[in-house]
Image 1 (cartoon, helix red, strand yellow):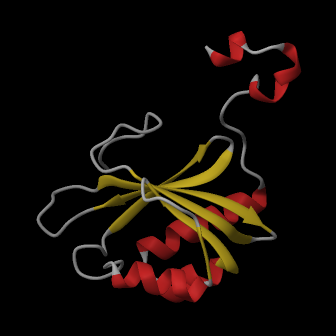
Image 2 (tube, rainbow, N blue to C red):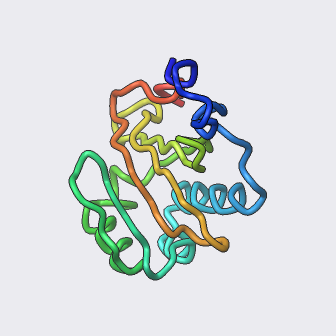
Image 3 (spheres, rainbow, N blue to C red):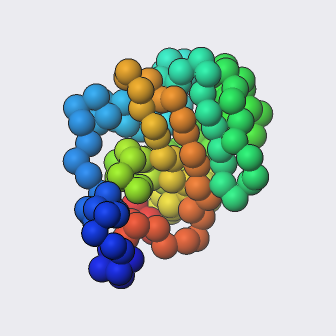
Length: 147
């Protein structure tokens, strides 16, 4: 609807909200998803720029942290520990940005449930910005609720 109502000078908003990922973006997204599915902290950290910009919405604020500090924070929140260690992922796009839909299966769950959307800004083969969105029990981007 917005695209139909925008003036001609706003052609940047008239294109579709998705785009084809470049080979570089596809490779980084695939590596990001693989690192989650293998619980590979070193692999995950290797994908992040040292001056990573990180936001987890709806929490306020964007943090500029080192890759190590970001991963340490995620681990202290339980990432890759029992209960947060059985991941499946789907590559997607959000607002023309590469993204990964992260699905988590809890120990008592029969299937992987949509948990988080990670939108990635990739610069020179590394993740420069990561914006996470809590997707638990929410319909997102026509993604399946479970895998």
